[in-house]
Length: 199
Image 1 (cartoon, helix red, strand yellow):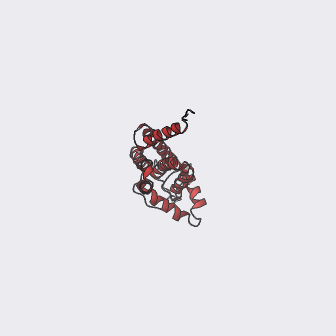
Image 2 (cartoon, rainbow, N blue to C red; image 1 turned 90 degrees about the vertical axis):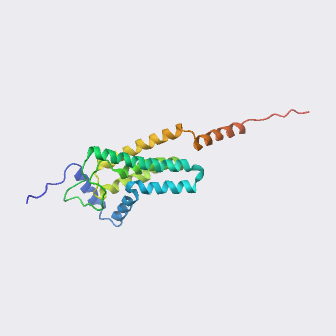
Image 3 (spheres, rainbow, N blue to C red; image 1 turned 45 degrees about the vertical axis):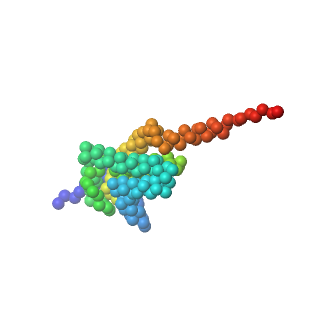
């Protein structure tokens, strides 16, 4: 049998990342944990539900994060079915986790994580995406189930969904709008002085 050709293109990057990271203690276990957490966006749905229950005054924002993660996942799945790019397949690439399909582009894990991180960061006022997206994206390559362009495209899909969700939330009436109006009224009242005539 002829020997397989050497990895080329993005396969070279996948092999290099696996060679550099997969053998380090705890890396594969962490990558698999992130994979299970992000499967179908379920982990982010659980986080958003718990947040809405423990912070009922901001329930809408928490639920929006879950809805955004799920929508981003669904959008990525739709694109996968159109593009139909197969996952990395080469003897030099170790596949370290099971997947629900053989389709690769874009990464639904990267999509849902990016959307969730941007929307949750809006709640906390911190750049969560910087801390959450790179580990999830890198884990998909370490596990041998995605190319770098898959995770980059997935992050772009998630960012677009988050931007749309934020824009929609700002336009819809509801608790968030009432709270903004109430805060503005309270600030206006606090700045109003009442003069009392002296006798």
